[in-house]
Length: 261
Length: 75
Image (cartoon, rainbow over all chains, first blue to last red; front, side, top):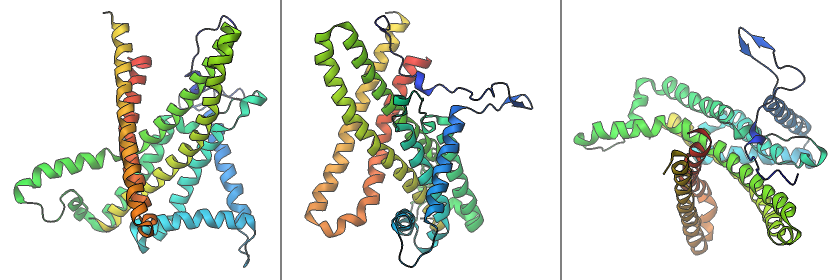
């Protein structure tokens, strides 16, 4: 290890086919079962177990049912606060979205490296978060046009706009509307990527300083390791906040579609 | 200056943006706390807006990080 002076913090994001499915393909497209797909399945499975375990409908809820009801109640309050009573019909979608992202973020932070496994955070890939963002954005468009028809375009011209400002304001609002799915997906992807890169860079400091000399290992290495512990705690906070922000912004955008301005 | 050095300098300069976004995020939370301590009753109702402000300020710092990463790994 002493000669591995170069650390590669980006290697953790490499997508690799698993279980010998490298050359599986449909119509010329490779559909190998990758580590990214494995962690998506895991996140969906954990979410399924979590919800099924709580769907007992007992009058006096046990701990598990209470946990599930707390999460659904949390999303319900979020939607009602942002959209009003019409927001109730989005509870299944926003709940699934929130829990899926939250579990994906947290599963990727599990210290599975201790057992020689390679945890993978698929929310650190723009392909995954971009699809989630496009899904939210499509629902906004579909609901908006189905409910208001072409009147939906009044979203781009707020009430009381002076005539001279209508055209410039329309384009400004149009750009700010069209950039939404991009910023929604980008925020989650970059926040997760940045955190994981930071952790790996610090881990590289620990290994390389300890290899260089005992004195450096004790000073730089120990300080970096303490910092890593703190940043791991911060990463858990970021994992929750980013899932919450994704759900919150979806609710805010759905509000535009439901109620216009 | 060769292209490789210019790329790395640009990535370093982009890191300034991350630091400035930290000022913005700090501003969001400090203003929220200031208001929340004056009127704790209204604080819980404003948490959604707090996180929208946080997300908007944070996004710009993350964009600076994206630019640094593009310069180092892609460009």
